[in-house]
Length: 348
Image (cartoon, helix red, strand yellow):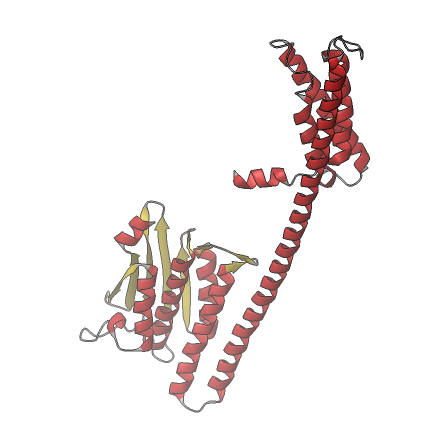
């Protein structure tokens, strides 16, 4: 509602209508429409109160005409509506003669008041127009700076990922290569988050999880070099989640998929890592990441409670998402679930 009122206050018919129509024709046409509206209102009022102020109804018409059609339309409305009231409403009816000598002075006063309305309405309209133009210029500059920042940020993510990949390829230690590959996957995850948050150059409050996770899974597959041996599949409901929750879910997904790629499959093994996000308006969201790898021995600690950096990050991101983490070994492979907690669901 506030937006509609703001747009109405900024309405300028000369700018809004096609440029092929000369501005003066628009102003004359709108002025005539306002005159006819004033006459129609006067005719209606005469049915109930014929003796009501003869000039009272011309003022709103003059104000509206000037605000939306500029001073030229306001002046046309003033001349037309004022002449009609003087001629048809003020006694003697249908005559420019005055039945009361005092009506001449009253007519001059009312005419001066109407001209004052035209002047001040035009000043107000011009001030609003200048403010709108300045605001639009600031918005355009802001959008340009955001696009530039977005472009530079994407380039920085790509540069960091490339540097990590170059270092990984040239380092002789397999452990260091693995650590650098994991770091690179995290950089790709942050890049996917950035792309989701600044969708189309606009900063969004809710993120389309299907598009977001699809981009994240695609980047993880390339960053972890899984395409030849291990595939990552995605099953995500068409749901939009608040930005902070979506980011935390994406980071949890990144860490769990990375852990699965690192630990679940021996060198040369083939398999699948399946990512699923289920959600609905009347039920909590539920993230499940399942692999069909080697699983974990019964006496091993769950991944979410181990001492590695990845496990600590998973715990931290799960809390940030407002979810409860559960790790299971269903016989073959590992299943990690993150379910929105009851309190977090109630808060939404």
